[in-house]
Image 1: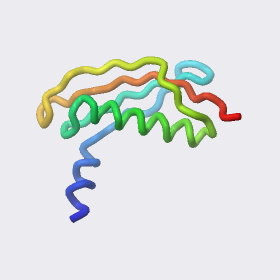
Image 2: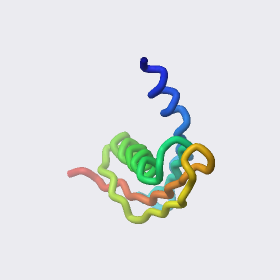
Image 3: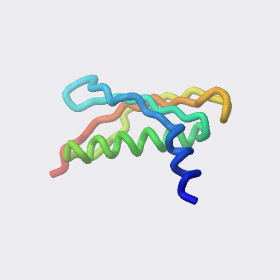
Image 4: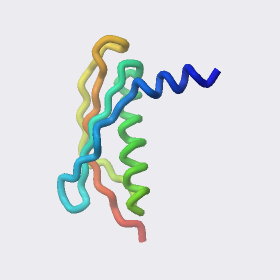
Length: 87
């Protein structure tokens, strides 16, 4: 029963987080099996996890999405974010 969700999760991908400035980062997420909103959510989750691992809080400063066709041409989301320090 768990194979189907694991298989779908394996079809989602995110590029590595790229540091643009001292506390500003960027990542690209895509998936053949998630719609445009699903891809954006996957990217936001990865950005949030990245910042939490640094001991910070993620704040989106920009995003772009490219439309796709589910199952054929994967939609993509480019997310630019900052990791704010938690006081």
